Image 1: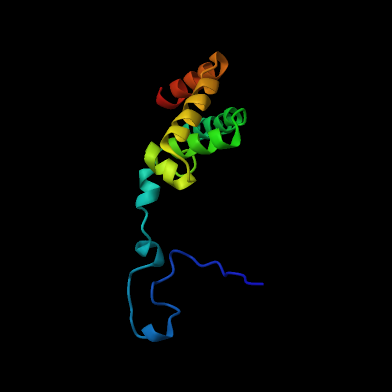
Image 2: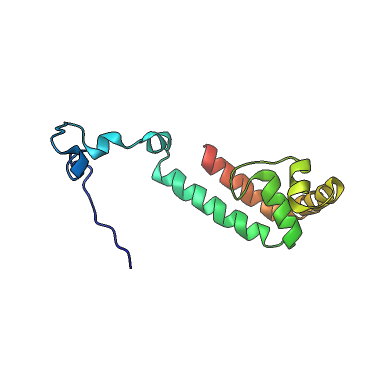
Length: 130
């Protein structure tokens, strides 16, 4: 079983590497880590909770769809990976025709346009943007 030792980000960069003996540096490990992703995420804890609740409700809404409808909607609107795709791309990915993808998408959207789902989505939109 593999385990990893915890290390401090304040540790000098060249402390434990035998190749770097004699290399004295003021640079710490923490200085070499790219923190751009951390800085981009400026959401508040409330926004994070709202986003998680939205994701949970969205998953519940998608349960009413058939497997093919769910896969088409997830691929078209990037629900799994954040990448939206064209009808052509989804059709080739699923090995189906473009008309089949359009019909599955249309059927799924019709099911998701029920008033109680729309109300739930509007509430999330207001909390996420407001």
